Length: 113
Image (cartoon, rainbow, N blue to C red; front, side, top):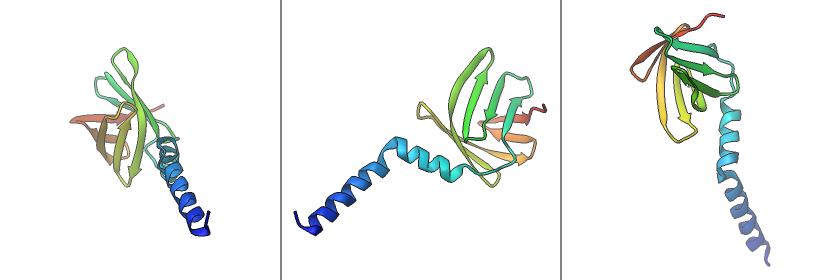
């Protein structure tokens, strides 16, 4: 095998590794593992929907009595949040203040400890 063929095979192998979904998610998570002021529990006024934004860029959403109804990852850019549910669903929202989140036509409030 020539050096050129070996280099090409190595490049193709590395591309396959970096394109693997598990590696891609870890890369994205490392990139987005940033400190932001929105980590914590967010709830609708009636308390029916509860979003917990975890510090590892994962979220866990409860709906009514159904705990962990939705889980996935999120990324905050400025005051904007993007969600990627583990089932493939995507959504986004906007933090209009440190204590108010608009998401999916709903208003969430930071739950105080």
